[in-house]
Image (cartoon, rainbow, N blue to C red; front, side):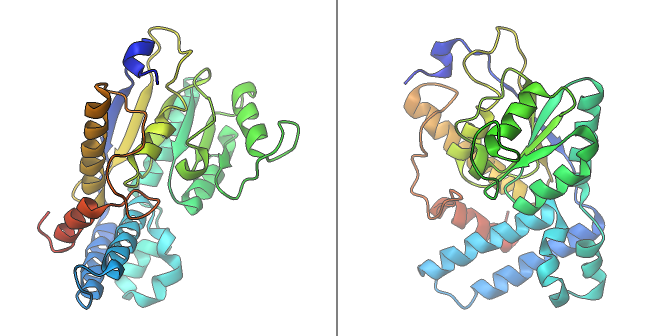
Length: 282
């Protein structure tokens, strides 16, 4: 294994852009946090169902923070005042991502935008259709570069089409096996889950061997303070730090060393911290 330190790659510039929740989002977030805690109260703390429910809880909180309209399917269960936050707003984060992508396009720069929710991937792609945006998620089939709408063709277009300024992707479907570093040097994360290996692999799409010395790679994390984003950020940093200690390298290119409960990387310590958050202790 060759580490980034050994390869001579410059470190990526990781920046966090704080985007506060709007007032309807904040009210909705607090309501769902209380409801998730209520549903957990009937389960034993050592019950696997308890941890599974916690995993569902954090996903719902991520949905509220990234894009409240993701909860449309359950909107009927919310009070009228809070239903507005779901039905009539994309949320501040998703609006910012669209604005930033257009700013970069004006500068002639391409961007890859990451979200763990397929609905977000498709929604942002539609919002940025004027930038030639295309998307990759689990529903986009693999194939050849000659076939329309395949993963390989979309990647080729991102490389070759000067009018395609944005690629929107789901890390679960696009975090490995794709190289974008020759044409794209800015990544935006609308949301992230607890899977540290997946996060690192997604960063490597634009930060890998072959980058000319001095090339600045920017990893931008859109972060809503006082929300589930705080927990995910803290836990990912902890996991990455432990991985880099094992490798004696800052870059980390191995599987997480924690025991994870599901494919999102949600482990027992994540569950412990999330429970504190639901109780208002974090």
